[in-house]
Image (cartoon, rainbow, N blue to C red; front, side, top):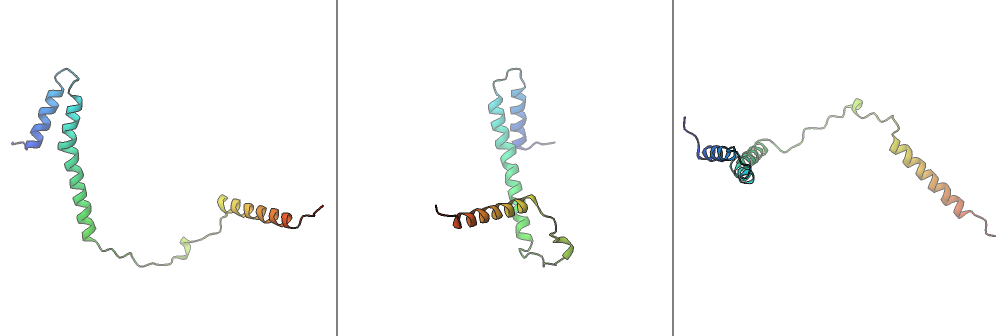
Length: 101
């Protein structure tokens, strides 16, 4: 079974790194990233590009399902914003109508 040149380089680098010393670690990971990771990223980019070209870019037709947009629950953010607005309105009213002594 014949191995590709990239696989041979990776195999030699891994074999050299396992010889007992820990000095070739950076070189091993550098070789692995160039031999395995970068081609993998390229294949993924090509796959995404081909899938993007294959499908239509029109969104599906909107179907208004009424049971999906029920807004009866008061959220904490809505309640807080209503309270803040009421507070500022009350403070503004009191400030504008204060007595001048």
